[in-house]
Image (cartoon, rainbow, N blue to C red; front, side, top):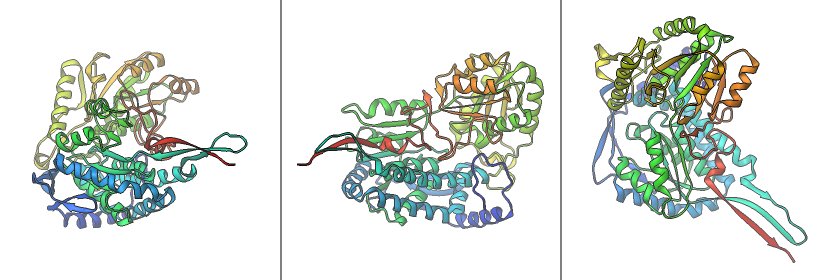
Length: 519
């Protein structure tokens, strides 16, 4: 089977569907159990009991019960990671990379099982789910490759006579890894793999909506042979587990993917007593621009996939669209036509494109965005929460396409993390780029045009970390390890060194200059 990425456009094929169905039946047979945390390689049960993980497509389906970890248990996980650090650091980068490559191989063997679980737990369709597992595998392999290509980040420096100097990047120690719900396997894997291959140990907290996916990552790392304490898995509320990871002096580095408010809170609180690395990848209010010379079918397909794939619950989702006035009407008709053909429903079904939103909070955000759209603009398609029949069991909503709102409306400024696309008419590319840049965010952006001067102007002037031109597979979405780096500018990210790219792993290390005088 060919590798499936987020931008793949071909059909999946019967072989894929049969493998997915078999894995889905296997996973369904394992649901409903109680799962421990893992600290220093040992299963641990929380003093504060458990919480339930339910399927967003059918909240009657209990996926499992997970531990409600507290601050004391988080301290134990940090202590375990600190105790394991010296041996893991001294193991050397070659052996660390070899173990992580084994983990990637184990994930490959279980890819359909993990994809089926992602479909149940996150609400991803089959295509999105298997693509996420493929991305997780490639993230491990790519970060190992970066370590290998840079010879463990050791570099000879200048010197003369008897003086020899080398620059060496060394791990910090213990890293906290806090992952979001929307890509719980790929993002956790990427953040953890970057920290681990560099020689750090990890305390990993998944989102409370997606703890089951976190166990998948723990299992492949354990089974690959990572020593106890190198990767610790702890679940529980952010107010307890997350807060302890932020304030505990035993944590040497922090990496987080999620919302801007939470990311900024971590960024400001983490390094209060001493400078420490804190990498925060936050949200986006991502624009797409369509110009008269564009292939309108490609553009409509790319915008539709980016705006409504996974219900707009991607930090890279297209939520703002700037259309040149000359093609406004014809493009809108095409976009509405394509959106109207999307199948909404059970994410595990073969033909579903759009599954559920993740929880009640997401549904409330969607409802708020729709109310705002009705007040400040006009909904030209969709905008209904779905509650009839099987939809009543989960968190389902129609895609919403909105026009007529003021260009400074909250619809063009606020990240709703929902399938809501705000559309505005523009007279020129200059106006479109100015509006696109008028945002506190700067994660992704896309344009459709066949004019080479317009293409270059867009790349020169757009204020986003990830940019695309004429991408039918996704106007603003679908970055892939080693192909597109993925990181935000402005309020979308803190480090300026993007995930999926060649500068990422070095962020998990600090430089030491080593000078030796030989006589």
